[in-house]
Image 1 (tube, helix red, strand yellow):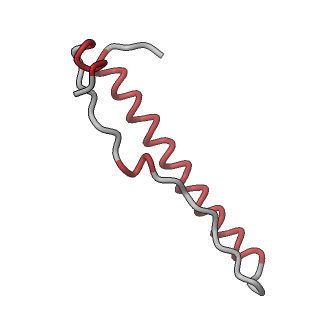
Image 2 (cartoon, rainbow, N blue to C red; image 1 turned 90 degrees about the vertical axis):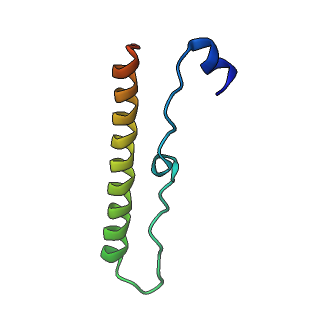
Image 3 (cartoon, rainbow, N blue to C red; image 1 turned 120 degrees about the vertical axis):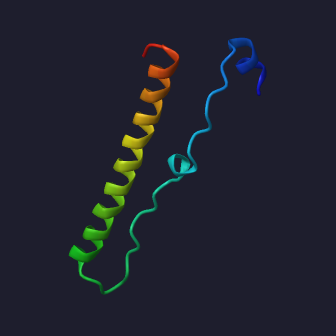
Length: 70
């Protein structure tokens, strides 16, 4: 428990490891069709956006649980 948590009387749950991960760009392979690279890049963006949504939900759950406001 940190000093701030002790002072607040609240022990926040840890952030899920998945929410700390960064999404890499899709690899570019020379000679590969651009559409294939674009498809993989969009899949990576979809994963990143889904992770952002999970982060927002995690935060919203905390604020609802502890009665804090945005």
